[in-house]
Length: 411
Image 1 (spheres, rainbow, N blue to C red):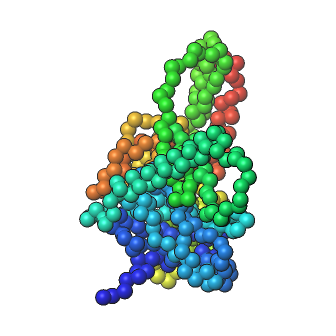
Image 2: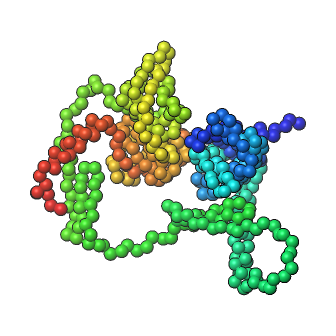
């Protein structure tokens, strides 16, 4: 019989604190099959992991479960360790956010950048019982809470305050369970850590209370064109948009924003091979790590690509940025209509950029997933419209010119 030990372990090297890992794949059908064989190195030299703890921290977006698990130090002197994906993590189809942490004896921690593990569907349902896995996880948490309650009750009764007797044999090392509560958008997450591992539970937020009486303070809002002021005497609005400007030169090529499905800026790199004629100096790019850059120079190639040289502007710092087209949502607006956006794993909080209109919006709600068509139906809240510096300066100058005389405007 063939030896398939380690056959499903994805190999990766963690070379520095900001080196990206993943993405990786897991499945409910795995039985100690898929996992990660990790090598920790510094400047190409393996890091000795002897005496250290290497842990996997994970959080399942759809199942709303999270946990931790330790790597097996397969060859610590060579910086090698490995782990099979935990059963509770791989039991549900969806997206898992994960992170690797190295813990020293004094408690110091070095963590990797977060990475993604996609848990794909299993046609046969998998060799493990998903409900049983979750039930075991919750049962372990209940046992830990019960044991902690018994210890506190015994301490309150004074069971530990007897007279000194003859020394007994050394017992096993104890473990004090810890409980933490983290505020979330939907309510709170309770985390219990005991000798069996980490268990979490989601507690939903309570019902919204009755509306209070209106106050007398003055408030204002700005939609980008209309200023609205509300006070005790009522509400007044003023449209501060200037007159429409002249049409631009139709022959002038506008600046574009390109989404690049590569790690362009990784490791100090600043250039990549782009489609010939598709880029121009002054265009913007956003690579797979969500680094915003400008096109500084282009070298024409002999084939169908050009060498595009970039200058980084800023790391956007978002979990997911999706490209789309034909999206028009005014800043601050939350229309009731839905848009079809490519990507079946979208979630509230993701950003959507319409590359033809420049509209940048945030996903407010995912109302449906069209798996057969590879997209999600979402409601979007408008954030802003990306434009060139010259366009913004002209728009600001026009708005300021309209503020010459507000004496006739009632607030």
